[in-house]
Image (cartoon, rainbow, N blue to C red; front, side, top):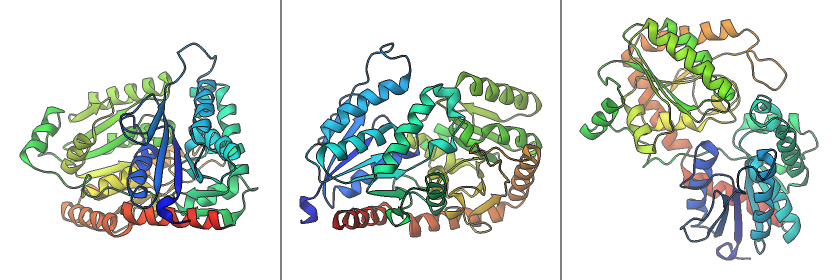
Length: 403
């Protein structure tokens, strides 16, 4: 079959304009490059889209189901039916894995899934989903049991998959990293960008450490907020942090931010998810990016910071060491973690202390920050372009279809 005639159906929770995390960014960019190589259709949550070749499924009304995961399963059933006619279905995240599994069975075609995270390694989601966490875990496991192929976004994620789901055949698991749109994410320091940064209360003439991410246990924001107490007084703490998983973690973060702001100036919390161009401008104005995650299959946010020319301090966990080159594009902070899937540091105080020491070491040498930032941009250009990611994904499709 000629690839131009190959019909691929992508099933996803997130798709523009409704993107709130790295998986959504991945899907949006992957679809763009795959459409140059094959016939690609998209099935997504959150209602109708105007984009040709994209079907959006509205969720059931609030209150229909006792748990939100049951509402997800309803959308999955509709998406599975919508995928009929594809030569191959490709799902992303547990939200759409069940749709891919059922759609593959219904159409008698291979189902490939991309692993952006693993439910057993996110036990804190029980806070958010209650009993639905058992259902999301079941849906994910069932999809892995039946998948014709699995794409891991990092070597670290591949190791996690084979450890958590030992029934998966290693020959069916490929590594294809996330990519970065190098035109969209780039250093922006023009007058309009400076004005935008100032409008958010950030002083572009002061050094700043920048955090960008959702407020979730995975991202480790409370550890950074504790470490930030040790930063030099002239350093701003800039948080572009929204979409809290639970009221409890939002309260914890708010209390820590309030405590920090009592002791130092320059604490800026933008408590909403920002448009890409605004995030780009804030990153470009920063001195250093911080990624204190305790669980990160790859960490696309680090790629975004590097593409903007910002050096990175990040936890040495998951796929992060495959992105951040220690001593070249940034600094990796060691972490020993509880072996219960939560990612919790064995010694939280030591982890906070190591974060603080590494941040202070990085901030002590502005010339080195500039060198590492330039090296990060080069690494993003050389290793993480979306055109390469698209070709590697097509190679997985070919392999699966040939078996």
